Image (cartoon, rainbow, N blue to C red; front, side):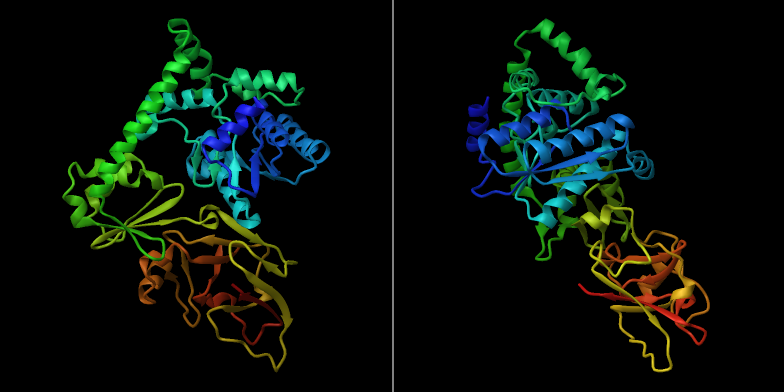
Length: 442
C-alpha cells in the first residue's frame, strides 16, 4: 500500500519538492489512514479538522481524537475549527452536506493562504469516485460531471484515489490505526449512502467486476471531455483582464447557439449551474446591473459584457465581529482600533481610510458585513436617510466594486461605509466625551 501510495503521487505529479502539506482529517478511517501513509512515506505535514457541530458528543470525540494523534503520535501542528453548520445552511439555503462542504473548503483555503501551504490533501478514494459518478448522473449533469473526482484541482490533491475502501480498511487494521465511525454514514436519507448501501451491492450482483469496468468508463469519459474542451476553447468568448476579472462579450456569446448550453460549458468551472445560465441568457440584453452568484464567484451583467470575478474567502463569510477590547484585526480588513478621550485640542482627521466615532453611541460587539439590497444609512452631513444603492450611484462607485465594500454596524445600524462615508448618527459632536477611532492599515 505504501509503495502504491508513493507511486501514485509521483505518477500524478501531486507534490512538488519541499511542498508544504495540509491534511484534511475528519477522524474517519479514510483520513486517518491518509495521515499514516504520509507519515510512513516521510512527507512533512500539518492537520486540519472541521467540527461541524452536527452530532453532539460524537463531533467532540472526533475532534479530540484528531487533536490527540496530531500531538502525541505524529507531533504535528493541528488546526481545528467549529462551525454552526445548520444555521449557515439555513441562511444560505443549502443542504447540510452542501453547507459543510462550502464551510470546509472556504476555511481550508483561508488556512492555505495564511500559512503558505502548497497543497491540501483530502482522503477521497476509488469508491468515492464511483459514488460521485452516480450522484451526478442521478441529479443531471454534463459530460464533465461524469468524469469523476480529479486527482488534483487547484490546490486540492486526492492521493488515495488509487485505493478502494476495502483496501484502506485492511491497511488500517494491519497498522492498528485508531479511527472513529461516523454514525451518519449509515443513514440512508442521504443520497450518497443510498448509492453505497443499496445501489452498489446490486451492481456487484449484476457484475462482480463492475468497479473496474466503471473506472474504465470514467477514464474514457475523461479523455472524451478533454477533446470536447479543446473544441470549446477555440470558440470561447471569455477574456481574462489583467486584474483577474473574466469578461464575456455578449454580442459574441449570442452567436453561439444554443447560447445557454455554450455559456454553461464556459462558466460551470466558476460554480454556476445550468439553470442560472439559462436565466443569464434570457435577461442579459435587458437587465444591465443584474448579478448572479455561485459559491465562489459573482457574475455581473453590464451593457456590453458579462463580468465574472471571484469571491474572496472574506466575501463568502456572513460577518465578522469586533469586540470592545480589540486593538486590531486582520480579517476581513486590516484595521487599527483605538479609544481616545476628547479634549479641546482633539483634531479629527478627515480621511476615507480613517473613521472617528462617538464611543458612547456604539454598542459592542460591532460587526463588519457586506451590503445588501434595502440597506440605508444617514450620510455624514445629512439629516435624512439614503439607500446605499443610491449612495453608490451618486458617488459613482463602479458596479464591479460594490461587492467589495464592507459596512461597519452597531446593533444593525450602519456606522460606516468603510472607506467611503461615516453615518451622521455616530459622528463626533460637541457632546462627545470619548472617541473610537478606526484606521484602515492595509
